[in-house]
Length: 386
Image (cartoon, rainbow, N blue to C red):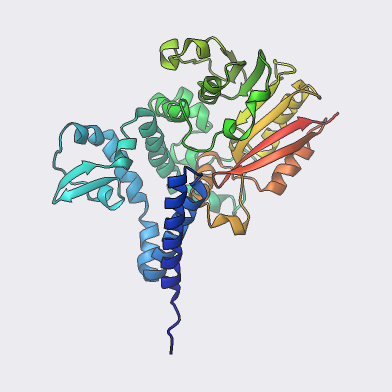
C-alpha cells in the first residue's frame, strides 16, 4: 500500500518548489518579494508543525530575546568591532537568530544580515524597532485590557505612553523629551533615501508624465527621504516638504546639487489649512496610519480643499489590513500592525474602512487607482470629484 505524504512532507515539498521558483526568478531578474514571503510563511508553518505545542508556544513567548540581543549588540557597537577584528565574546542569541555566524566555538563573524547593520541608518531603524517597540509591546496586553479590546479614541494613553510614563504623543516625545531616541528614529527613516529596499511609490505611480516645473507637496515628509529619492529619478519635478520641524538635511548630505535646488522645506501642521493650493501631487507617506479616523478626516479635508479638481492627485502610501486569504503572505505586515498598536494606538485599515474614510470627506475624494504592495502596504491614487 502506498503511504500518503504527511502534512510535514507536503510542506517540505512546497518549500522546495518555492525555492526553485525563487532561484528561477532571481536568475531572470524578476520580482521576488511575493515568493520570499511565501517561503518565509511556509517555513514558519513547518516549524510550528514539527515542534510540540509547548515548545512552539514558549518559543513565541520568548521571541523578545532576539530584540533584546540586537539592542545590546548595537549599544555596544559589537558589529563594527567584529568588522575590525574577529574578537571572541558570548553572542549565542545573535547566532541563533542568524544575525552572526559562528564558524568555530566562540569565534564570531559577520554575515550579510549583520553587514546590513553596519549602515548607520539601517542600524538606527532596527534599534528603534527592538528598543521602543519591545518596551511598548510589553505594556500592550495591559493597554488592550484597559480598553476592553477596543481602539481608544478618547485620549487614553497608548502602550508606548504607559511604557515611557508620558502623556506626550510618540512624535512629540521624541522631538522634545528623548532627543537621543528621536535622533535615532529620524536616522532610521533615512534608510531608504538613496534607494528603497521595498517597492517604492515611484515604482508604482508614473511620475514621468509630470511636466517640467510640476510641484509635489510631501506632507509630513520629515527630512525628505521620499522626495529626495524621487527627485534623483525625476529631474523635472520640484518638491515642497512639509513637517512640524524645519530640520532640513545639508547640501553635503544630499550630495547632488541638482536635487538640492529642487527641494524646499516648509514648517506645517497638517491639522491646519494646507497653504499650497493646486499642486500637481500631494503625498502622504505613512501618515494616516499614525492617526485616528477623526484626525485622518481633518488631514484629508485640508488636502481636499487645496486640491485642483481637474489636475491635482493625492498619493497615499500606507498600511492595509489584509483579508484572510492574503494574511499567509504577510508575516511582516502583521508584525508591523501589532507594532503600530503598541506605539501609536492605531491599526491598519481594511479596504472597506479606507473607502468609508474617503467617502466622509466634504467635496468627496475618489480612489481612481490602488496597488497592494509588499504585504500589508497599499498605494492609493486619489482625485477630487467635481
